[in-house]
Image (cartoon, rainbow, N blue to C red; front, side, top):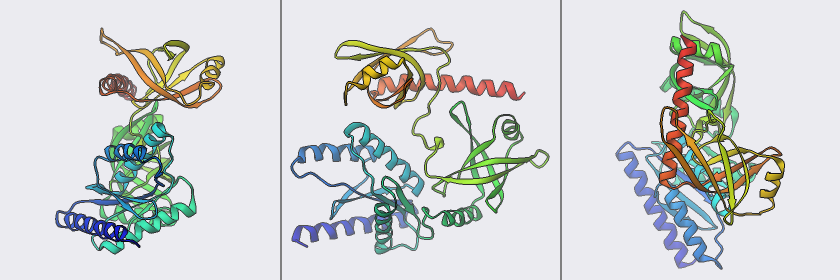
Amino acid sequence: MNRCEIVNKYLNFAIIEAEIENAKKNNLSLSIIKFKYEVDLDNTYFFKDFAEEIYKILNFFPILYDNKNNFIVICKNHKLHKSIAIFRKLRQKLKDKYNIDIDRVGITELDKKDNLTDILERVDKYLIASKRLSVGKIIYGLRSFDFYNISNREDGLKTVLKEDANIQIYNIYKGIPIKERGSVIEYKNNTIVLKTTYEELKYLNKYEEFLYLKHKNFPNIIKGEIDKFNFSEKIVFIKNLEFQDESIVDRESTRVRPDRSIRLMVEYQNHIIADGIISSISTNSISVKMKKQNIDKIKKIKNSEFILKFNLFVKNSISINSITIKAKVFNTTDTEIIFVITPNAFIETKIQSYIKSIQKQILQTIKISLK
């Protein structure tokens, strides 16, 4: 190890140890992310821009270089599940913008009993497991539980529920997560007995076969099938629980289906080359129904940026939001194409307003149907 490597190593130790001390002193959450990325020394200007982008996406958290092409991110005031979510966001944005996959990563959260060696050894263990177990899989855990092991997840859930039985319930109606609160009365044999409101039970009984559960101290979303209800006790039995690393509940932005037909035009080099009908929209992607010949035409233009043009109509508003936005192709089928979009703040606000108006309509429909 040369002089620069030694100085860097102990500087990293000092920074992480200071962050651990601050977190414990002020009773704050702290998570550590460690990922592998090989820097191309023949293209250092690209790396500078790439690192700047990472720094911004990660909310300006400290990024340290550990030797052997490993980087450490210190996520201040972030519990494990929040750090996992922010890294997924980072990975997707880097894939969209640079076509670069960061597929080796370990994440852990500081425990009150941890010292510097404990937390670094644990995040190293998860990074090594990420290299060994599955390309592209985020491996994570706590001092007590390694969550990539299913039996450990079950033990971990039992532990957090003993400490706090409150849990968030998510129903998915027309692609939109609708949140309600509940508390867990019992958890055993892969079944949860859940107490919630009478209105929630009416909704579940009418619309849902399964639901999603999320606990503030548990990193996985739990999907379960609805087994039976007890309306007098306001409880529901949830069976066949599945621990999900990712789900619709974790989406950074909500996706909605338009309430009317919206025609979208695709422009390339100042010429309209295709058109279609928007089937769903969020602030980071748009799915469009198209004729196969239009999709084939777009697919022939490799790795290019397109301009999308369309109008959004907000119900009970006289204004029409005209949208012009840059996009790249994410995926295609014979009848549909998904674009990743990069809106500026002004356009993003317009799309968010449209999504909220659709959500409001859906919630009103639910309230009427449950009366």
